[in-house]
Length: 287
Image (cartoon, rainbow, N blue to C red; front, top):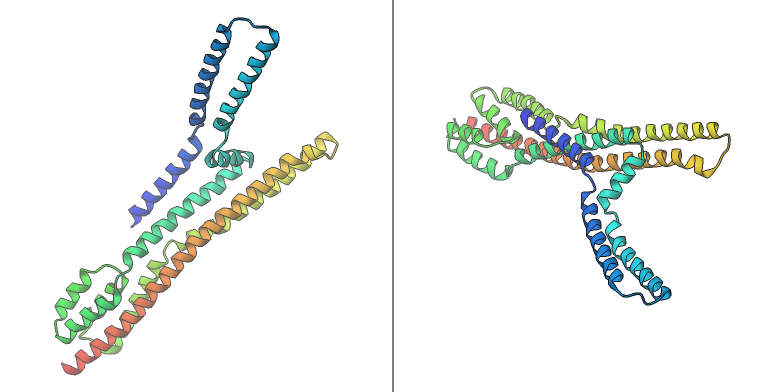
């Protein structure tokens, strides 16, 4: 799982680099086609015999209007391009830190979600089959079933079956201790997610303070308070704050989903432990 975590972090960093290196080539290509259309139309106009200055002016005016109409839809920016523009306007230094917190936080979230999804099994069916093997005194078969099944439920059941010849109190303590270890493994890495949730708005507020300082510096240099002078610093402050809050909200949603999965698996572990102790108690009475 450590290798998987490193792979997710590498993929996250690759995504971040590709986001910043993307250029606006897609917009440039259609503009060149429009230019070709404009040139061909201008050649057509040039080939028309002279019919007076007024007629020539009207033709040129209509040609310019049609060219503007063709260029206008091409130059309309998409969401990705607008996002990059706002990103740069919000001071690329602080915005890069906010974006890095988002990418790393999502990498840890994805790693935890995959780990928890692989750890989840049909615990009721698993315990029903396990109880049947214990009732039939097939302890080795029950152990093999635990070894062949992934997840913390099978792990704690295997630990209990390994000590089935010991007193019931000893088996219960062993299951409880190993269950605490498995619960800690389920929550592994969640502290990093909470760190990025706290960092994102903090970086945004830091950008806000820096933007206000920039605004006051510009006012001091100009010796005058005008909206134009203050606008640049205020814009940086507001954009960084907005992006920081958005990143924190996104990571918080994923974090709450991860916590719900952890609670579900913990409940499965507790129910399975109780069922196993009951089955072992019946096995000891019949033995």
